[in-house]
Image 1 (cartoon, rainbow, N blue to C red):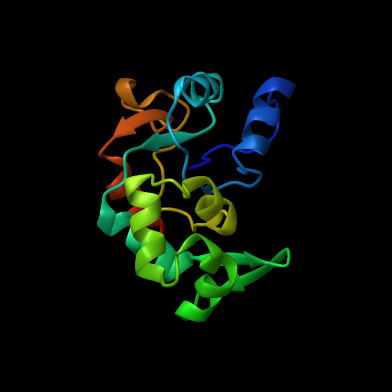
Image 2 (cartoon, rainbow, N blue to C red):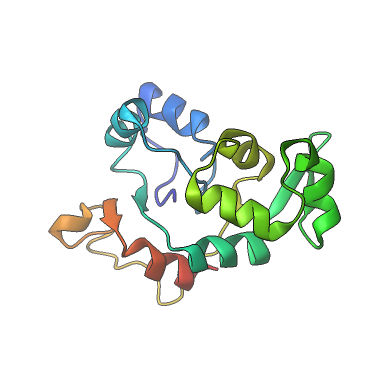
Length: 158
């Protein structure tokens, strides 16, 4: 989830955020963790927060804020036909299959994640703390890795 704006961001960090499709404040995406993406996350740590979502969190995000990409258009995932049209060729024919593919990081994770438009979340209810937004999560701030605590933040932002 991107938690800081674009002003004063180094070009390298800006490029990494473009690769992760985090172009706007409060955008969220799913990322498959490997050595390369972990290095990229370290580079943009001051501007984003990340962690391991539960199945319930993934499900809420997709059902409430999910939009699919069909012919480069942003279509809300209102019923299974949208998922069927976008990902039917990969044996993902309903929203439950999509949730399962994203949560379990299956063989078609890349295509499923690319089909999903980046989630546009709202400000967290209760807000960020003014003093600690810019600090790392380990120092009592908001940015950086937060493990399972990401679920609480997403719940406040949906």
